Image 1 (cartoon, rainbow, N blue to C red):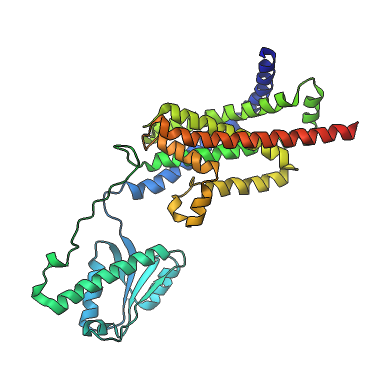
Image 2: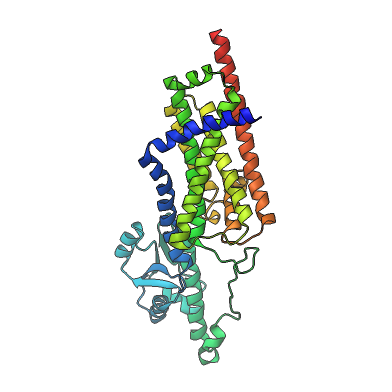
Length: 389
């Protein structure tokens, strides 16, 4: 047993020394996830940590000269929920096409009929960029509320005061995370997502390196030595996972020093998720080497797969931006569970029992990938040896 362990460690040490041989490349391996996480955290932190209510940029186009239309337009321009500016139709269409802003409310000629309680209801155009459907719905809601309030004042006059026109309730937002005193941290979420994504890319590069060794004959020289195949694969996986763990520690340490990123929940749970994610990266790299064929072909397919599971798994953007069926399908991806595990152990402040299921799913996925890679490589090696014999 001791001899086997020494053999695996020696093989892992070879890859470890190769990694550190190029100091600049090694430095970039630690620097890139920090830069990506910092940039993403900065973008999302500005919206989640703002003390003021979000205001929707919108253009208002007035094509009816009536007094009621003018009052509605003035209410929209003064609304605390809108960052509104009055424009002509031509200017609004030009700006909406450039998403500056992405929505325009057009009060057309004949809009004054709204004040006459006529059955002939005028249409209101909501010009919007194809990518701003949510903003268009937001603008429609504010417009509906504004018109109904103005109609109530017009029809009931002094009988209805401002207090009666106000909503009959007070909205009190309360974020539910499953842990007391938990508060969403955009930087912590971003560092978790970018770290996981970079781990997958690192695993991919490890697999591509193995394919390169095959093409250059290095693999054949290693296999010619009295070293069992499982020891070679274990050494490769151990080196990949070990360097991946260093990336996790370095990235989160930088996040803590720069932005206060911390583990507010179970430290043991965080370590387990990190170990499972590093194991997944190593197993994924071996799977790339097993089924990749040539290095060029494997690189293209691997990048597509990594970016796909990162996007669907919530490593880039919040999951609610995805269609419902995509969110359901994402539960089958280990990246989804790895992200849940990191979130639970960090900003959500949850305990070990809450983190264990996520760590278990990631570790199980790594085991499946490792078994598939080992079986495929073993089958390929067997065919090569039989062909040579």
